[in-house]
Structures are given as structure tokens and as C-alpha cells.
Length: 515
Image (cartoon, rainbow, N blue to C red; front, side):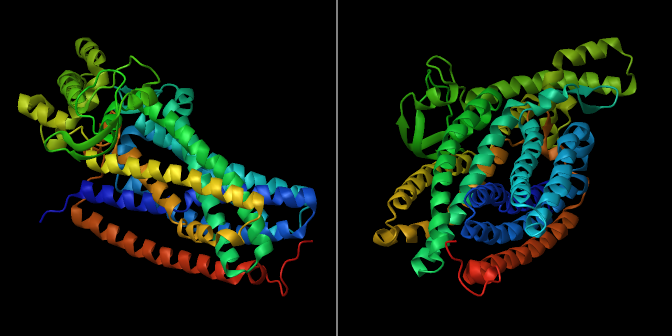
């Protein structure tokens, strides 16, 4: 059987990205919690808050190191597996990626080092400043990655250069202030705060169940519950903003998430549950909430949301127009001074990427038949069932976290941990759930963009390097083995330090007192 190098490259990048993202949100969330804990220590002078900062800081350090190790390999893949992508948009995509590298590997890493080795060398206020800079640095690092990713979702501030045959920056400010990137940033960061809060809440609950390190556990439980409640509420609000922005710039993604095959009269209803059937373009056993989708995604009563069928017809028209741009581009490749070809290209430039969709089906755009164009248009529909269920599970988990942190906040305020031990078990069991929600969020964001690597500009199929399937399979297996070893090491280290507890982990011979 012939191996598909593009599919294998997608699997490899998806696997490494999702594995890397196991560490990113915890780094973002824990960094802010550490800064909050140390702030209390500096304000009160009570050493238990310093011990808490140092203990959770050790777990943060393990997670940070794993994040760095897994993040480096991802950036190399743009050159090894996605060479044409790097050539085509490197001038744009490389800028935020380079700034993120400077932030993560120079600024952030420097302050992380000072955090661990500066306790006895810096004053209280100096060390607190370092800790807050670690938190700020981790957030800024995420910002630049999401600016790069947001541009892939909504390619603003750039244009195709006929002379170089590549996409180039026309307005860096527009790239940075991209509304999709900004919405993704605040939503992703808030989700990271939820991950950090659940992590601290679950381990604190474990200590309370075991009646170990209760002084630290109660305080950690309290700060995690309040911070987590605010973060969980923010995720819902900011998620709504992400949906609104996607409605403006990625209509097919929204239609696929809702399994909305036909355009409905405004405001459209929201499908709570159902069974999407992509083959027959229908959703079986659907339960609808009237008006809900239209009000949430458009914030109006009269704006219509296009269904999948309408968007496929629009894609068909854009492919037809894009062929004209592609034809003019072939002339310009041999004669860049041809004024007529330049004018023709300018008229249809916005649809050039749609003509390139034909190459995904091994069809020369200049020889495409009506059937070929229709087939390429139908290929703009992403996997509907996957997006439909991934989104709903993610949203359900988001509301679960609000309930979890609300209950935790009330228990912490009343100091009634012993009376509700069942809740402590629930909190411990909830430990993996924020990671599941975060990963599902990326599935919705990235799978929902297919078949585009850059929305409306460059199809995924032609962005890959000219590699044979066997080569990509070999590297994929290598990554699986390497990342599996890292996963085992990470879980072992985390579990070891949690079982040790703060006293042994910090090298204390006696339990930390409420000094």
C-alpha cells in the first residue's frame, strides 16, 4: 500500500502539537498561581506561603522543561515536513515565530532560572518581580504563537507578490492585531488558567483526603478555587467572542461545528445534540434550541448564517474565478511585464487559493472540468461529526468546571472539607478533564480549518515537503517512541514529587508550620 506523505506529515505535526500542548496550558496557569502565592508571602511574611510557592514551583519546573523539549521539535517540522509552506509564507509566519523564540528561550527561560536559584540571592520584592515576569513571559510567549496561528486562520496584512511568487507582509500591525489571533489568545490563556487551577485543586484535594500537609493543601485549595472560578467564567465569555470572530472569518467551520447543512432563516437555531451524517448531508435525532445559534454567533436577530450546502456552492464559484487568476499567473511566470495578465490576476487574486484546491485532487486547474470543480468544492467541508462532538464535549466540560470551582469556592469559604469528602474525590478525578477540553479546543480550531493550511490561500495538500511516505513514517515512529519516553518520565517525576509532598520535596526535616 502506498503511504501518503501529506497525511503522515499531518499526523506527525498534529501528534507533536497536541503532545506539546499538554505542557503549555499548565505552564501558563501555574506561573500565575505561583506569582499570586508569592505575593501573599511578601505581603504577610508567613513562610508557609513561601513553601507553597517553592513546592508548586518544582512541579512547574518539571512541566516547563518538558514543554521546551517538545516545543523545539515542532518548529523544525516547518522546514522538514512543510517546506513549501515555509517558502510560500515564511516572510509572514516567521516573524511572530522568531519573537516567540526570543521570549520563550531567552526572556522566559532567564527568569525561570532566577526563580529557582534566586531565593537566597534576591530580596523578597526582587524575587517576587522575577516570579511575575515568569508569569508575564509565559503569557507573552503564547501570544506570539497565537498571532502566528491566528494568521493561518485569517490571513490579514499580507498579499501575494507576483514578482517573487510568494505571500509577503504588507501591514505587520494588521498581522499582530488580527481579531482572530487576539480572540484565540485570551481564550487560550484563560483555558490555561483553568488547567493550572484544576491541577492545584486536585492535588490539594488528594492531600486533604489523605490528611497530609493540610495547612498547605487548604490554602492551595482556596487560591485555586477562587482563581479557577474566575478563569472558568472567563473561558465561557471569551469562547463566545472566539465564536463570533469565527462567524466573520470562517463560516464553513461554524457550519460544520453545528452540522448545519441548509441555510436557516435568521436567527438560526442551535443543535444541542444529534447524529451528523455527512454522506447524506443530514443530522438525525437533532434537538434544537430556537434562535440560540444566531444570537450567539451573530449577536443579531436578522443576520443569516450560511449552511454547508450554500458555502459549497460559493466555493465552487470561487474555484471557477480562481482558475482565471491561476491562468494569468502562468503567463506572468514567463512574462512578468504582461499588463493584461496582471490586470486579470488582480481581478481574481482573492480566489487564487481556491483554484489550488484542484491540485489536492491531482487536477490541473487549467484542465479542470465542471465535475472536478464540484469535487474540489465539496472537499472544503471538514469532518462534520468530529467537529460537532468535539465542540459539544468541550463546552460541556467548560460548564462542569464552573460548577466544580463554585462548589470548591463555597467549601473553602466555609472550611467544611471534612463534611464533603465526596467532593474531594470528584476534584481528584477531574484532574485530566481540563487537558481533554484544551485538546478538543485545538481539534475544533485546526480540523475545522481543513482543507486549508492557510484559510482561503494555501491548501494543506500542496504545502508539504517533497518527501516519500516511508521517510515521514520513519520520523513519525521516532517521535512516537521519543515522546512516549518523555511522557513516562514526566508522569514519574510529577507523581514522585506529589507523593513526597512539600516537606520532603523541599528538603525539610519537619512539616512546614503556619509561621
